[in-house]
Length: 113
Image 1 (cartoon, rainbow, N blue to C red):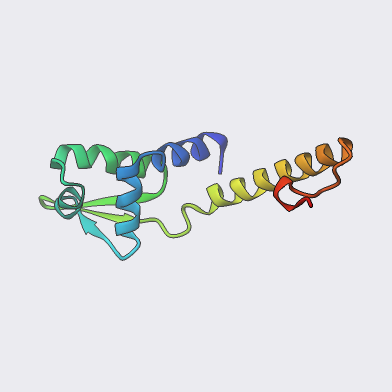
Image 2 (cartoon, rainbow, N blue to C red; image 1 turned 90 degrees about the vertical axis):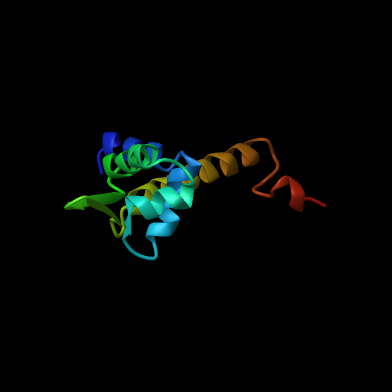
């Protein structure tokens, strides 16, 4: 995943309503009308949220007549999760080295006696 795609995915999940939509879509596809009812907002407002999910590569939308159905893209959060894992490991290693440098070893503050 490119940096731009990673940024788009991160921006897509930065909103509580969009996270609610993703949680709903985990159980299967839903229409825009169903998603609007879930959020208790208008269809146009819901479409804007869905557009951000689609731009982030997290969902797809399909129009069949007047009905728009949104589907979660399986594994679409995996690159974000991998980035978070790598970043956590990097910072954990930095903080452990910093603690060792200060003479505190790798103990965490709450674990000292």
